[in-house]
Each structure stands twice: as structure tokens, then as C-alpha cells.
Length: 460
Ligand SMILES: Cc1cc2nc3c(=O)[nH]c(=O)nc-3n(C[C@H](O)[C@H](O)[C@H](O)COP(=O)(O)OP(=O)(O)OC[C@H]3O[C@@H](n4cnc5c(N)ncnc54)[C@H](O)[C@@H]3O)c2cc1C
Image (cartoon, rainbow, N blue to C red; front, side, top):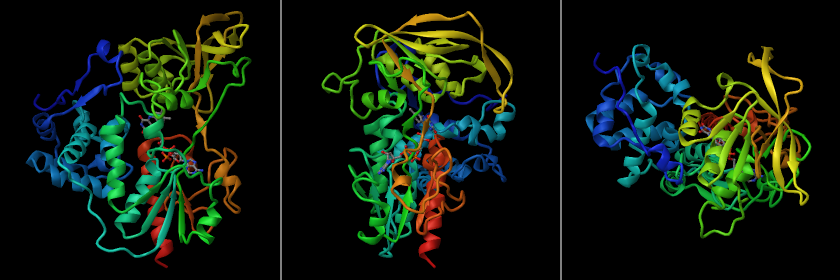
């Protein structure tokens, strides 16, 4: 039947891309985008919009693509999203907009993410920028962190005329988009930097190398720097470890550190001096998206790359597309396997990892079947690098230097979902700093909610 299948998107071949850091997905060209856009049924009650955390007018922008009016499509996108080129690439569309698309009932859902990406890329190539505020209101707002939450909050506030300054601890803006997600999924120069520049084009100021809680505190931002409100979008960058013997050995990394070295500090490029372990065989512990990114990075850096995960394939928390791409490229999956010790040589370097085989028992509190160790099944995997990818939590620096800012027992800032309001007057928060590690689009939704909360607070 007509329209059941989506227009396929071109990708680099697995064997070719496993040896480079170029983007895997090549996106739609103009003809392909228009053809795919025509599959949209323009539903009167669009469920796709309900599935989008930032409520993009999806039929609206896709309708403009059908007409070939890509500039108008971009303005519709940028009314709701400060980072459409990013979201078109990394959002879990299959469980959000595309998961709700009526087309999906009898065939493939419309490729909403790929269309969003096409429009945002077209706007960049044609120098189209989001619309600026007509006039300034003179009120100063500080945004802590330049990840998706901070950028999205800053973008909305600037559009409403606020004088916004983002303070970022690192030397480059973008948060996880810059230091975490690898180049082959999210190119930095071609995608992340231009979207950050778009936010700056709205009048947002950006100060890098400023660590709030060390360089200056939140109270000083209010009392000495003249800010009337603060949004905290400082993310969840503190890695977790297993607490097994050998975890302090040379050659053991958190996934965040490993990816930061490769992305932000450019260890993947020959002309950068950032040290990276010369790894012949890397073991990545964990089964989430971050583990897939670390495994695919290690592979591209020349290692045999193994994912070690204690449950089975059905429970892998990573997106199906990421697992599929990792397998196609040659990542090896050691499932139902749990590390018990990291083995070292006499100089303290990793030489392997001792694991135990697991089987699945009864479901636990998460609803997933609990992995149970099989007695006597221990075995060793040789490796010269071990990358721990077990999740992250918020860094307590800001909460520990800000009197009156409540956090929960996981050190996440307590904030209202609809407004980002925290326990401290004038301080709003959102994104991973509040929820713990989540997704780009949820961080953006929280950034928008924080902007709304701050606007209400400062309009009183
Ligand atoms: C490797 C990896 C891959 C991922 N892949 C995906 C994906 O494909 N799709 C998806 O939707 N999500 C993905 N995620 C999750 C997603 O990136 C995060 O949920 C999202 O970036 C959170 O946004 P945020 O703005 O809250 O925090 P972050 O992106 O973490 O940004 C926080 C920023 O605050 C800065 N900061 C921290 N403390 C301070 C301070 N004291 N002073 C000043 N600045 C500070 C940090 O340096 C950072 O730049 C991935 C995460 C990782 C780690």
C-alpha cells in the first residue's frame, strides 16, 4: 500500500564508518525530505505533538516542508526548540513523536526526526536565524551550565527580552552535546556550535571557564553581580563506579572521562596531545546509550571493543538503533556477564577483568528480571582498558555552596516540574541536575519550564 514505508535515509557503510569519526547518518536531501513529508497525514488531533516534550507543531513544520518553504518550517521549529539540528539527531523519537504517529499503526511512522534535522541543517546552510526579541526589559538572569537545559532556558528568556548570561565551567559550551556524545552521532563544528551560536544570536552572553560554587557563588551572583534570578542547569556529570577490587588501576576510565578525552580534548585526532590509553582490547561495563558511545569510540580508536552487561539483550537500556549500529560496526556483546574484579599487572595497569556468568531470576522493583550470579562460573577476559558506564549523578558543588537549596538523597536539586522553582527564592533548576541522567529533550523541556517560572517570578 502507498506510503507504508518511509523514505530510507542514507548512512555510511558499517565497515567504512567503523574506522572514522564522520557522522554515521547522512540525512535527507531536499527531494527525499519533501517525499517523506508528504507521508504526514496532517492529523487534526496530532498525537505526535503530544509525544514531543517541547510540543513542536509537527504537522505545521512538515506541511511547510511539503510546500518547499523550508524557512517557514524552521521558524515553526525554533518557536519551540532552541536545538532542532541536535534533537533531529539524538532524540529517542521512536518512543516520543514517532511512537505516536498514526502512520505507525499500519506501516512506518513518518521520519519526524530526520525531517527536523533536514530543516535545521537547511536553515544553517542558508543563514536563517531564530527571531530576536523586539526590545529588552533590562532584567538580568544567570544561567548555570550550557547544556540543553541551560541553552533552552537562555534562548526562551532572551526571546522575551531578558539580559541573559550563561556561565559554563568548561572551556567549550554545549554540555554533554560537546563533551559526551561522539562526533559520529553529533558533529560539533557542523551541528552543535552553530546551534549554540543561534542561541547567542538572540543576545545571550556566554562566559566559559567559570565554575559556579568555586569562581563565584549563586549568592554572589544575586548580591554582587546584579542578577535577579538564576537557572541551574548543571547536569549530572559525576560518574558511578561498581566498588570492585582493581577499579583504581591505570587504564580504568569512567565513560564520561573516556568520551571527554576523545570529544572535547580531541584525543581522537593525531595532532592533539591529549593522552589516551593505547588499547588493543577495551571492555565497556554497562548497557546504556553511553556504553554504546564508549564502545563505538574505542572501536574507532582501533580496539577490539566488548560490551559487558549483566542482563540479556532484551533488557539493554540503550536505544535499539544504537545497539544495531554498534553490532553492525563490530562491537562484541558479552551479555549475562558481570565483572567481579579488575586484574592488574605488576605496574598497576589493567590486564583484564574477572567476570561471573549470570542468569535471569524473578522481576525486581524496576520490573526487569533480576540478574543472579551462577556459582562457580567465573572467567577472565583479557583487556588493557576498562570503561565503566554505570550512570552518573549531579555534582554536589552547587548545592553544597548554596544555602537554602534543597537536594534529595541522590543529590538532585529539588524543583517543581512545571516551573523549575526550587526551595531558594529566585533560583530555578532543571535538566539532569534535577532528574539525574535523562535525555536532551527532557532537559530542554525543563529549561523551557524554568524560563517560564523565571518570567512569572520577575513579572510580579
Ligand atoms: C555519552 C552520552 C550520550 C548521550 N546520548 C544521548 C542521546 O543520544 N539522546 C538523548 O536524548 N540524550 C543522550 N544523553 C543524555 C543527554 O545528553 C543529557 O540528558 C543532557 O545533556 C542533559 O542536559 P543538561 O543541560 O541537564 O546537562 P549537561 O548536558 O550535562 O550540561 C550541564 C553543563 O553544566 C556545566 N556545569 C556543571 N557544573 C557547573 C558549575 N558548577 N558551574 C558552571 N557550569 C557547570 C557542565 O560543564 C555542562 O556543560 C547522553 C548522555 C551521555 C553522557
